[in-house]
Structures are given as structure tokens and as C-alpha cells.
Length: 467
Image (cartoon, rainbow, N blue to C red; front, side, top):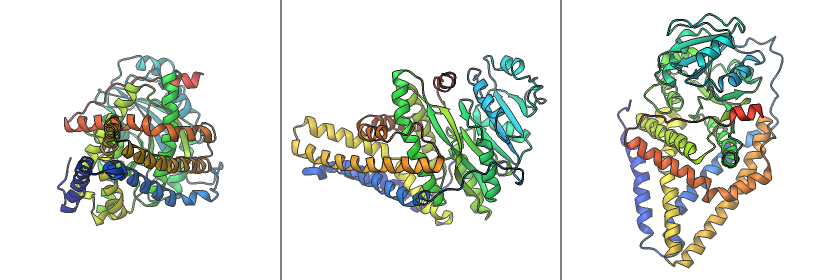
């Protein structure tokens, strides 16, 4: 729930809105490229972020030690995996197969069955040898797989299903894996090593590769999202080095179980329960002087089903951005608060700007169209000069990110430099506008107080695995 804000936090958030209003108004009173001040501000802000990420990711240029396959000498923390599932019988076999073949895998794999009404029950009983226990109680181990368990809970959403599983598990760490996410064989081991090597580690993100359907729409969205995900994970590494990482995707994330219990688990009222949880963990760490760490683990990798149609993509981004706004509002007292160090003084003010970034971007595009069709040829030429310079910067940054991503993760497939160059050129007037549109829908969803996730149709993971 929202906490009392501070004067500095209020000023930061209001200044972002006031600046947008001022820059937008300038478009009707100025001549030349400065009439497009909204777009220039957008370009400058985005370029500064790219420069920050570039500087913070320089350590990735150094050789990274490989993951040690020998675990016999290691005192690894035990790990349990929770798969929150609601009507996911189609993809569960693929997800569970990947979890069951993990190298030095988890001590427990719990399917947190969130009131499924499809064929989930029959699948788990007949194919995986599980016998249901009363609702809210962990089943006996599977007759076929001794580390596999079934937990049935009344339908109440992903967060409640995860919380129910956390209270029933006994491992040192827990990993959350979406039912549409397929892990590499050594993913859980890499996470366990990370927790062993970093005693203060409380939450860790794995690397995800998006997989969409094989139709034309799916291939286009997978192309754009592949490079988007690469840039995002490189950016997470940068914020991790600044001790300010907040974004841990619940589709593939690991946590210290005692820390989850201490902060009360996931919040069922939040649209993005994974993102909100990290704020509470950070707050709890500062309140109790614990020095907890949040990291992204390059050796822990997997694939996840990603939206492959315009409608499903917009629904996903609407929920993500509405949840981001919701979390920013609930934790607004942390913004500009020196008590939280770099997180409070740098990261959260940046997030305050990010609340308006899609508005800046869409306004800049609308003004460009207005100048174009209003006969302001000189202004349009100047604007395209700025856009051309920004595209060149983005192109260099794309190539830099791919180079670092390959060194960091060892992944070479799906990261063609030529395709990345094409994406950098095409993105500003295609995928980027679609992203901003989804974020604008998120603003409307947040202002209306929306709580529904919407229904997502799976199309990529199963088709890819069977192909």
C-alpha cells in the first residue's frame, strides 16, 4: 500500500510532468528544431541512460570464469522450485521435463496449482505419478519423480499460489518459474552457486530468451523482443553494479526463502508482484541494516513464451506498465531518499522519469506528424537530422550490447549483428511506438484502478520445443 511521500519525492515526480507540459507548449511558439523540444528531451535522456549502461558494463569486457561443473566440493544451499500454474496443462509437460533433468537439480519441485479447471489434474496424476492432497497441503512425492510435489489451492492468482508454496517448502532458497518457461539444464545449479558465492544475495534473476509463435507475426515480434531482452539484461547488469537493481522477472527468479517469509511474500494486490517484492526486500534490508544484494546471474539461462501478436503484446505491456506505476506510487517515499543510497538518489528518480517516458515518446511522434503534414519542411528536416544521429548512436549501442551479451552468457544463436543493425534502424517508428502505446494503455489501466491481468494465449514455447 502507498506510504507517506516526502517533499523531494513530490518535487521529482511533479517536475517530470511539468517539464513535459513546458516542452509540449514550446512546439507552438518556437521555430526550427527547438520546436521539437519534447523529442530532443526524449533523445537526450535515452542517450544518457545508454552512456551510463555502457560505463557500468565495461567489466564484462574482461574474461569471466566459467561455471564450475564440479559441485562435490561445494556446500551449495538447497533449492526448491515453484511452478505457479493456472490452466497450463498444454505447457506443463515441457516445463517440468526441463526441471526434472536439471544438473544437481532442486530438492523440491512444487506445482502450485491455482485452481486449474483444464486437464492439469489428470496430467499430474497420470503422467507424473502425483496424488492430490487436500487443498492447501503439499502432496506426497511423485511415485515417478521423488522431488516432485503438487499443491492445490483455490484460484486466487499467482501471488497467492506462490505464497502458499513458500510456506510449505523447507529449502534454503526458492526459485519461481512460470509454467511457460523452459530452463537450460544447469540453470538451477548456476543459481545455487550464485547464492553460495554471495552470502548477502537475497534475490537473483536469470537470463531469459523470448520465444514466439512460428507465424509471420510471431517471427516479427520475436525478432524485436530478442534484441530488447538482450539490451534489458545488459542494463540490469549495469544497475546491479550500482547496487540498484530492482527488476527481477518472476518467470525465472530465485530468492532466499527466509527473506521472503520475513517480508510477507508476494503481494496479491500488485499487478507485477515480482517487481514490487524487490522494493520491499530493499526497504527491509535498509530498515534492519542487512546489506542484502540483488543480482542477475549470467550463467542461469532459459527460454520463455513471449507474445507474438499485437493484441497479446499490448495486453502484456499494459499490465507491466500499470504495475510499474502502481509500485512506483506505493514506494514513492523512497524516491530521492538518501537513506536508500544510490537506489533512492539515482535509480528511483530515473524511474520517476520513466513513468513519463512513453508520453514524451508518443508526443514527440505526434508533433513530428503535425510538422510534417503542416508544411513545416525545414523543421522536419532538422528533426530527421536528430533522429538520424540518435539512430546511429543506437546502432553502436546495439552492437556493443550484443558483444557483451555473448561474452557474458556464451549465447551466440539468435544474436546476428546484421539483424541487430536492421532492428536498430526499424525500431524507432515501429516496435518502439508499439511499446509506448502499451505503456499509455498501462497509464489508463492504472488511473482506472484496474486489477485484471487479462488472458494470454501461449503459442511459442511448445511449438518451439516440438519443432
